[in-house]
Amino acid sequence: MKGSLIIVGFFCLGILCGLFHLLPESMQHSEISFYALCTLMFCVGFSIGNDPQTLRTFRTLNPKLIFLPIATILGTLSGALAASLFLPHRSITDCLAVGSGLGYYSLSSIFITEYKGAELGTVALLSNIFREIVTLLFTPLLVRWFGTLAPISSGGATTADTTLPIITQTIGQQWAVVSIFHGFMTDFCVLFLVTFFCML
Image (tube, rainbow, N blue to C red; front, side, top):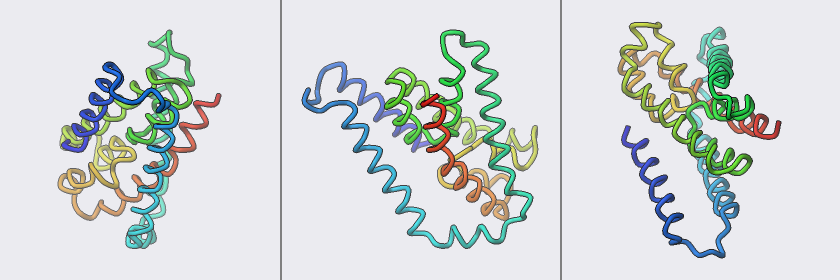
């Protein structure tokens, strides 16, 4: 929850900087986004490479659980497709691009802003933050209503980090490996899915 609020705070700070022209005009928005994206990708790669235990834990998974990230991605894209029916001012590909963020608000919103503009990038940011907050707040209810794997699927790409504690606290430590695997795989797919739908 705290991490989500910090992200929203920086988002609001960016709005204020834009409204009051607090950044030098020589700094183009595309350049800022590009360098922020490069830094972000470096940090993601560093965190994965710095934790070899994460890669080892994947070997202990039940082979059937390899389909959980696939089910999460297909379910999310189906939901985005259904949402596009109620948003006539938005194209199907715009909705699918936002859905492809899978909760990874920082990476997906930067890419969507680059390809589709700041408005849709803002929608992606808020949509994915909302997904994380719902998982943080309602994990016990998700388990009660939809089963053990529901909060993992709901958390999307966040299940390897920010939502991992609440998930393992609710459904048990034995599901930590599944949650990390799920978060790792959905993290990996965000880059390709968002880029694909933005370019259609």
